[in-house]
Length: 413
Image 1: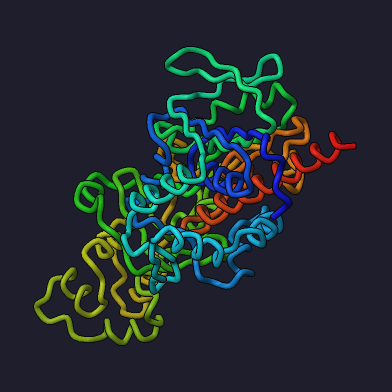
Image 2 (image 1 turned 60 degrees about the horizontal axis):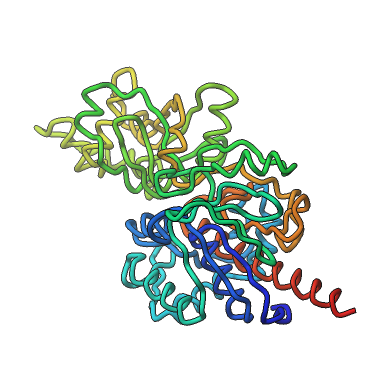
């Protein structure tokens, strides 16, 4: 960390999600007076929502495949993770009294399997560090060299020594990250890429019977392939189409393909643990008096929803065991659309990475730093989102400290 700034320095952090709270903690530990603003009545609402599925904090895989998950932003994300790595995050969480465990998939979770205990401990730590948190304080723009906030008591103008913007992207807008900041920064000369849904579900033209019977049921375990990239995991049937971890891992490429071509095709392997030959041997067993569904369940090891998916594909099921095994191992499914930002777990787009320096300060607005999903990067679920979000909070805070130290040095000359 850079040398502590002068004790009189005050920094305002706008946005009380994981990136903003991490920046606030880092700054407060360095002796800076920190004020955190959030438009919502309480902090960390999106973190609490993420915790409903177990709060996947990070992942245990090696750093090279880890950083590759950030696609076009991989090189930049690698620099962020050098500053705040998965090891750092694990130590930080355990320091809050939250023991962690690594699941069979390599994902890292709190043993409590929810976000509320961690968030309570974190807010308590920030209070002990002297961080002031102002809820129902919405940033509405800049005026006369200050930052203007709408509060229950009326407008309030603040003129801190530096600002960290951590307002989130544009997904789950009802939780506060509505992307409303975009127009103001565009007016200030900051280039902002359009928001696009990420980690999102996709539309499929199910028959009414299939949607009615199987919506809410998981396909697992499966292997999902799109344009040569394959992931293993599970997917969830919904009335509109398909979502879930395996889908989210491919969502950026799926979205891009649909935006380009209107539709795209995925290939689903319903028995990824068996070779095509081994599956064909199992299917060669006599069917006896079993129905086709029971036979596929017993001999093929398929769940009712998997059998339903096989029958959803136009045309009759192949009669020969080899052809049937081939179909089970390669169900082709057409995706016809992308769900919107209001249903997306995260968003792509935001402030272009070339608009900030290495410390995440906006080149167009000296003294204003950015962290989290406001920046133009994306990653699949699985711990990669929270890891990078919190890492950017650390990088932005260190950038602030370097900026304040430089100003203090200049003033002393």
